[in-house]
Image (cartoon, rainbow, N blue to C red; front, side, top):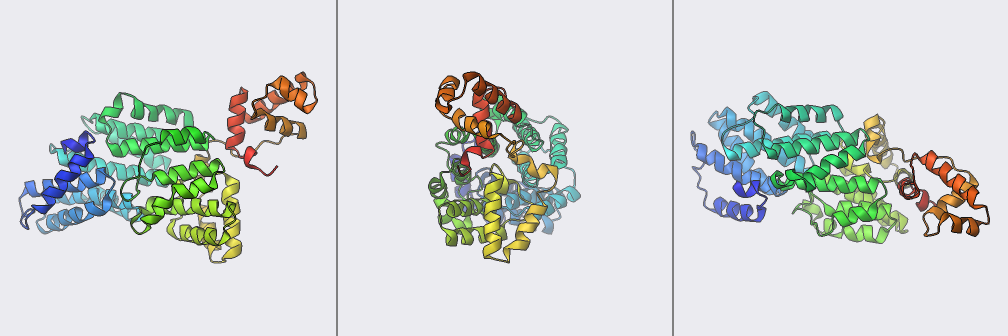
Length: 427
């Protein structure tokens, strides 16, 4: 477990595989706490590495043997680990049920055993995932309070608290505050204590915020060199595809998710639906309607209507609407699925991952001309010459655009116009 705490997961996995081979059938005999601790350690190594499929057999063993021997503390931990397995696999209804069983079983929060402490930690990450995926601010608040109330909470838990606070801020539309919290995890003193799982969450969320703000290239640089976990629970392809779609690089969006398709049968359902939705958008934009229909229909059937955070995150409204209209016209069975998803986007928090308003302000014909020129390398004086109008007029119109967008300077206006889809509209 020391390797898990210090993010030496390859070494931890190697030890876990060897330990699994040498287990005997009496490992979990009644009263054998060492056996339960070993199984918990094996499960948490796989969960910390984002490989829930290998953790589940150990979790099942703990639960069955703990129930047989009436070990309430280990039954509690089995539910905690099971919740994390299910959340990482993308089954949030089942994860929620496991978390509820854990709460019913008892309120044990911390034990002296190192492996038990990390088991508790991965359960809290499952709670985070459920709250995040369902965009549930109240639940995120409860998680933050829960962590802060843990006696002697260590730095590992503090990093999860920071992640929850960052997500809460973003859910409420305050991306600047959210990025500040994420920076503390990724580059501050907290980094050395954060488990890789939290670091991955933080990095991916940071990239999605930047994509949502129209900073696609920055987001791609942030995740350069990153790789997906074995089952793509932490799916870098999803992030790259989102960035490329926002940058109108549709071929690159498909290329970014080719690896996802190669492991589709064991791909985490948490990210598979969002990946397929992005492939559908890219194929539709590239004039591949048949494949767009196949990917889009598959995505709709995989996505639970309550679990929409990753689905719409950082995409432009008109891209989603265009795809949904296409799917509804091509396959009538898609209509109720689309309607269910749209209904769950009605509450204010459901729009939060647009990161402020995605609607374009009403611009005059002259403002539209100048807005198009703002993204070029021309100075305002050169723009005035190019358009054949006075420099003062260009400056006045530019400041009018800034005011409508709620920004203070040209670079911010260009970024905001890009984020709201102005430059991707047909000319």
